[in-house]
Length: 81
Image (cartoon, rainbow, N blue to C red):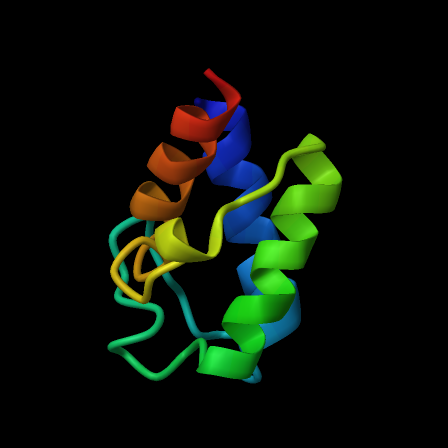
């Protein structure tokens, strides 16, 4: 689980943070905090599907499921289990 969290965290930092000094944690609100918007959520979903060779059903790809690194990790773990 640690590896997934770290991969997702690194992706979010590289793709969505504009300020190199800005820090986020595994519990930082991504969507409700304005870091990830709905368009970015779609690209994050596609990244996860490609990286882990999974298909995330649209009904599971909710803003709540994508709001923190930990919730995204839990979703990926649920689908890969």
